[in-house]
Amino acid sequence: MRMFSFFFLFSFPSASLFLLTFLILPLPTAFQGPTSFHVIQISSFANSTWAQNQGSGWLGDLQIHGWDSISGTAIFLKPWSKGNFSNEEVTELEELFRVYLVGFIRVIQDHVSEFQMKYPFEIQGIAGCELHSEEATVSFLRGALGGLDFLSFKNDSCVPAPEGGSRAQRFCTRITQYQVKPEAWLSSGPSPGPGRLLLVCHVSGFYPKPIWVRWMQGEQEQLGTQQGDVLPNVDGTWYLRVTLDVAAGEAAGLTCQVKHSSLGGQDIILYWGHPTSIGVICLVIIVPSLILLLCLALWFLRRWSYQNIP
Image (spheres, rainbow, N blue to C red):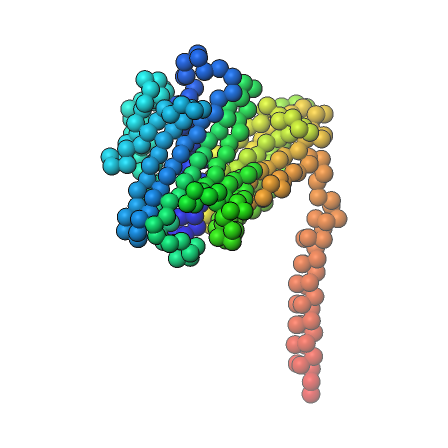
């Protein structure tokens, strides 16, 4: 439960932001070129029983969304700021934000003493993205405590701010403790047709759920990459299968690249065409078997020797 709480604390703003970015797709033609969208959250904690959240959404320097903390509903400040969402979809989004904001307050109140915070205090957060003309997206998330920078996320990794001191360092350490690094391996799937290969990249055992996996040729992402559903493992981690259909002669030099918050910016890169050698496979299979046979032989000889003692 605590693992969920901490993941919920630092990941939900960006997840909510991902949903909200669709609001800016049907903007008026006056908005051209690079566009930034961000959400601001201000949470005030008066004591252990009273706290309040304020929220707003901004397109550049223009506020287009507000948040009614009493009713727990969104305020659309422009005729077009609702985007293409239906009333039912807006209701679902509002419920997500209500759950997040209530959970945020509870998590902070549960860890006030651990991080040596004294009432009253205020937490400010900003999460957003920049959409460029090439459809490239750059996201950001920063948090402040009492008006001073506390932490930020860079390449999905928590970075404590100098102003945050040891408290921010402990917080980032705690977040990192609730991440599990993925394991990845390659295989071939059923042939899609004559002269073609189906390359399969398996990624398993990672937590939290958000992950980026692509087949690459150098720095170029392969457009034929097909990503399956992210499926749960029995231990609460996740599994993903990503495939690529290529001509047999074009597979050399392809790599599977994995980005995940637990990796600290050190991506996993697997090279197709560099399979594990037969010798290594033999060692992995044969050596344990030889050890087992040796143990059985020693046990048999020892028992036989005891039986032949006069």
